[in-house]
Length: 264
Image (cartoon, rainbow, N blue to C red; front, side, top):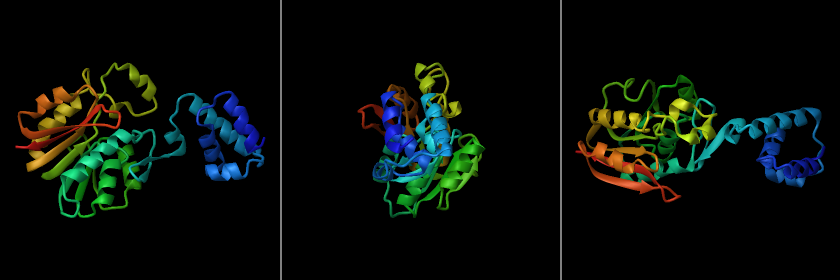
């Protein structure tokens, strides 16, 4: 079967991401596919393509099939041990870069680093920043270490637990914030549940981070959190006891998505 025929046949039956799956099966770019449409797939390539189509049709995210996902202007290794990077989280990078001078030395902590997208992106943009990152999953940390080319200090454990006694100028996190019984979880069944869900109201981990961050922030330091679209007001109330200058941010879809607060 040629590339041209396979593409037409699979498009007729509405196979999702067929062009990307063909690229993956043949290890070619789209440009190479289109310039070589009469190429005949061999049996091994057809078998690989069939396996990819079945997995994608069953809902497995393309990023896990490919093993990488773009974030900001970088490419990251991902696996089912880590969340798939999403455009909404790029907002945290923008806020951090707007809040601090990128040429000055500051200390930053990334909580629940996963594949390392926040810590690594900021280390690339701000080489003078001293960056630490934690995650309770050793498998996720191993992926983050594969992605990292800079001197980031990685620690395995829950939130602040594995850290030495340290103070930071900025603590940033994209923590779990989905409610336990949220119906949208079915759409995320391939991603690690512990990185998504946080109690009945989705705020268990955010509460813990807000409470404990006061011990690890320098006076005047900042806490930056990603959160659910309907959680802004409740998080502001949690912050008001110990934080000031609370700012909220919307994502590209005009939904409340991030919050920044300064320690009193």
